[in-house]
Image (cartoon, rainbow, N blue to C red; front, top):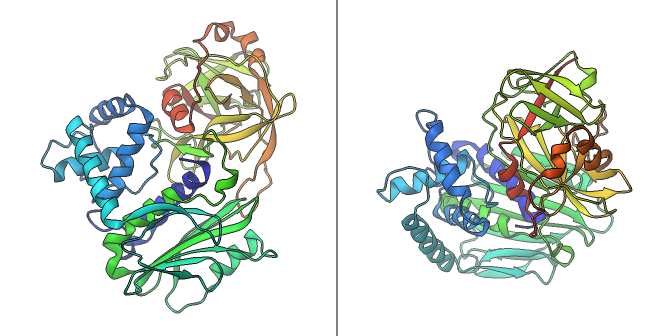
Length: 465
């Protein structure tokens, strides 16, 4: 999945969930929460089986579960509780044990169901000649095609209950003005139930007394492009999953998409360890390099006490990066790393950092770009201070330096900004074993794979000033 559609779906799944029972996914498309929390051992067994599959197959399973109505998340190949519950729900409906482990029979049935559903909807990804966007259209359901009166294309069902629009914003429009304009629409009974502004896109979703809507605008080299879909609540049971599939397919600027995948954010499931500081963002991120040792470039020397979960760690070496050590095991797996030998200006990187999006602590891989000799540009959020930085093959290139205490924000979001980086050779000086890490990977590593590989080694740091 490319960076544009990944960002779309990350927020789409939250938007759909926020619409509530009357405006959310139907019972089949969004299974009722289990009566109790799944057995951690069963979840971990399912995680191991899922992550042992090739990335393409993991994504195919999630895409199939979207079409089966069991999953409304991101088809990025990353395992989380939603993926576990979606597989289990599919298994229960098929009369098989709900283990959450996708067996060969499950995968065959999912692929067959996917092909059948896609064929029935006539779902095809096309490039819209009027706007230039790439988008999936269920052509057998939206048989009426014409112009969007506001510029762009329109596809509708014969009865007019489903309308899919693409559009290009006027040249003098800004993302901020369009965001405010869409929020200010005063149609009687219209309620915005979800909104997320970002420096280069925004999402607004909600409902009316009889319908539901989802809108996304994206800013890029071709101006501002958008798609929206509105539909009657009477057809929500069929349409909710189509919205997820359409969002997965949406690429606002296909002509500028990178040849190699460069996801902006790939989210893991909520981290099982307790979130430092309760609901707030963590102080920083570190990387376990031993059962009791952590490397980070977060300014831990400013803290009276630093903790990883419930375990206190102490600075034992370095002045940034720092080597921290605990008197007991950290419940983290020492990272198996290769290190990059050079820092090339303009090359893409991924920052592995913890953050709190309001739903608990999560591990993210955030895309950035190397800048100069020891800096990177990325939209880093609180919690990324000290985080490890990897190149496109998953080799460690350094650690993010201290983030400002009061970062500049645009509409409440920290935009892409330059941050200092402590290069990997500086970390090797205080922990020489890093230089003896694993062989340098030959193939590109996606954000989802980086999160999956490093999940057990990344740790969130809490600070007592």
